[in-house]
View 1: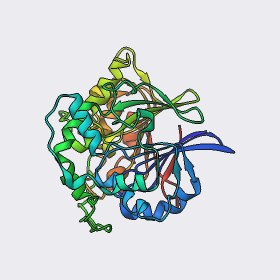
View 2: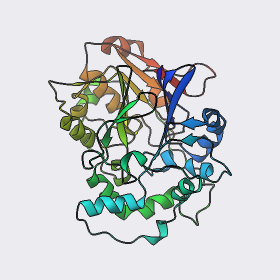
View 3: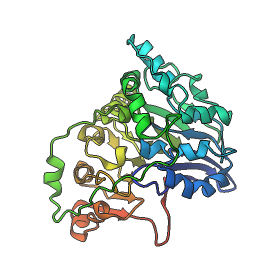
View 4: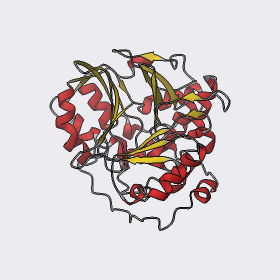
Length: 358
C-alpha cells in the first residue's frame, strides 16, 4: 500500500501519505489546512493515533492555520515520531550559516505552534538533529528512512530561502493568527470570484511566459520525494520550482536523465508561478495531483495545466483534483481530453477528499 489522500482543505493542503500493509499501515500528515478544515478532519486524524511524520510545510495560513485549534486541545490528536517545521530560530540559524545579519523579532518567540509542539512534548526536527530543515545546505539533507520503509529525499527549502523569510516572519504569522495575542478563531476570508474559461487554447496558454514565484513564505516550503515499494511521489508544497530543480540537478537528474515520478503533487495548488516548463522537463511523470477548492486566487491556473499537457503530448496523463470547482471542471471537455490525451479524476459522489494509489 502506498497512497496519497488529499483531504478537503479549502484552498490549502491537508495531505496524508500512507504506506505499508492494510493490517500494519504507516502514515505521514502534511499540513492541516484552515481552522475549519482541521475541525472537520480531527476525528479522522484521531483514528490514526500514531503517525511517523507530521510536516508543517510553511507558514501560509492555508497550510498552518489548522494547527492552532489542534495545539489548543487538551491532548494531541495523534502522536508523531517526528515533527518537521521550521520555526523562527531555524530561520535565524539558516541566516547565520549564510553569514547574514539578523534582526530580533521577540514578538514571535512564543508563537503558538512552537508552544504546542513543546506542550505535547513532540520531537521537533529530530531527523535533522533539531536544526532547521534545509536541502543541499545541511549535512543531514540526504535520504531519510522512516519506519515502515518510506524513504524521503528533501528538495526544498535551502538556507537562502529560509534566511529570506526571517524579515517577513512576524507579518506572516499575524496573517495566520499565530502570535500569542491573536484570537484563535480567524475571520473568514472574503471569497474571490471564480471564473470558467470560455475557450481553451492549450498551446497559447502553455506558451505564456513563465514568471516565477518570489514570495518568501512559499520559498521556505518543505518539499520532498517520498519513495516506497519502487514508487515515487513528489510533494511540492508551495515551493519554488527553481529550488526543486536545483536539488534534482544536484542529485544527478537532467533533461536527458529524468527522474521517474509516479505522482507529482503540484506546487502551490497549480499556480502558474510554481510549475515551470524547466521543472517539468526534469520529470518523467504522467500523473499530477492538485489540492484546492479554488476559493481564493482561482487556482489551478490554466497555464499550469496547459504546460503539463504540452510537456508530454505522446503519453496518457491523469489529473487528480480533490474538488470539483470552475477552474477544474473547465478541463472536463471531451475534445480537449482526446486531443491532449488525459483524464480528470475527482472525488466520488459524497466523498470528502480524494485518495490516490501511488
